[in-house]
Length: 359
Ligand SMILES: NC(=O)c1ccc[n+]([C@@H]2O[C@H](COP(=O)([O-])OP(=O)(O)OC[C@H]3O[C@@H](n4cnc5c(N)ncnc54)[C@H](O)[C@@H]3O)[C@@H](O)[C@H]2O)c1
Ligand SMILES: [Zn+2]
Image (cartoon, rainbow, N blue to C red; front, side):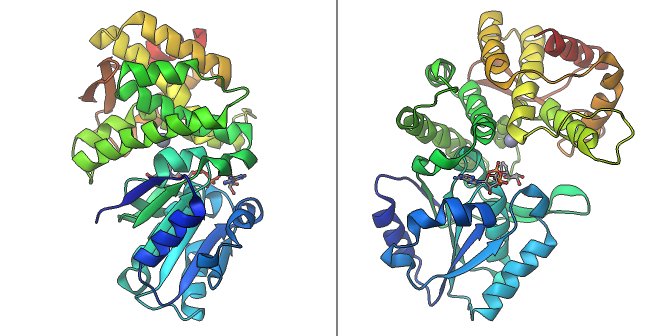
C-alpha cells in the first residue's frame, strides 16, 4: 500500500483531509499517557477529531507488549469498531509501532494514520511500514509490514520533547546523512543540538524522511538495499543490549550504567562502524573524525573496558541481522557509498572498540 508522508504546514487541515480520505464509520485516537498529556491538547479541539474515541496506553518501549496490544484491541471492540473504522496514532515509535500493529490485525486490518511526536518516530519509526510489539523478551518479535495511510509530521510537537529523546532521534538523522549525500551530512554536522532551532530542524527532518522513504521504496521487505538503514546498528544493538543488562536491578555485573536510549547506542555504533569503514573500505579519515567529534560533543561517551569486549562481540554474533553465524555489517566507502553485507574479523571489531574508547 502507498503511504502519504506529509511534512505539516497546517496540521488541522492536513489531518482533516487525511481523516476524510480514510473513509470510516468510527474514529479512534491512540496515545500513551505522556502524549495524552503533552500532545493531545494541541489536537483535541480539531473538528475532525471531535467524535474520536480515545485509547490511552502506558508509555515507553517496556509497554510495547501484548498487554497494551490487548488493551487496544479491547478498546476498539468495546467502542464498536468495524473493518471500516480508522485509528490515529499520536506518539513516539512505541505508539506508532503498537498502534500500527493493532490496526493491521484488528478485523484483518483497518486504516491507520500516524502522527509521530518524537524525532525518532518522525524520521524513522512512523515511516516504512514496520509495525509490531516486543515478545518473549525479544524486541519487535511479533509484527507485520503494513503502511499507515498517512504520516503527518509536525515538528512543533518537539517543543515538549526532552533533550535526551531529541538527541536520540537525531542519531538516526545522522545515519541518514551518512548514507545519502555530503550536503545533507554537512548540514547535520553544522546544527547546534544544544539549542536546537526547530524551524531549521524542520527542513532537515523533511530531507531525512526522504532518505528513509527512498530506501524503503526500493526494498520494502528488507531483501537488500534496506540494509543501508542498519549502519551503526550492529555495534549499536550490542551497546543497547549490553546497557540494558547493566541497568537491570538484578544484574550482578556491578555495572550500574543506566540503559542507553536507542539513538545513543546507534551514535556510538556509528563511531565503531565508521572506523571499520575507514580501515576496510577507505572511508575518508577527515569525514570520520568530523562525525566522531560531533557525536562525542553531543552524546558524550559510554564507559566500557576491554573486559567487556567478549560480551559485546557475543551480542553481535546473536544479532538477528546475521546469517550462518557471520556478523553482518553495513559499512560505507564514502558518504552515500553504501556497502551492505560486510564482515569483520574479531580482531577488527576489537580495534573498533579500542577506537571508540579513545574517541
Ligand atoms: N517501525 C520502525 O521502523 C522503527 C524504527 C525505529 C524504532 N522503532 C521503535 O520505536 C520505539 C522507540 O520510539 P521513540 O524513541 O519515539 O520512543 P517512545 O515512543 O517510547 O517515546 C519516548 C518517550 O517520549 C514521550 N513522548 C513522545 N512524544 C513526546 C512529546 N512530543 N513531548 C514529550 N514527550 C513525548 C513518550 O511518551 C515516551 O515516554 C521502539 O519501540 C522502537 O523499537 C521502530
Ligand atoms: Zn535505529
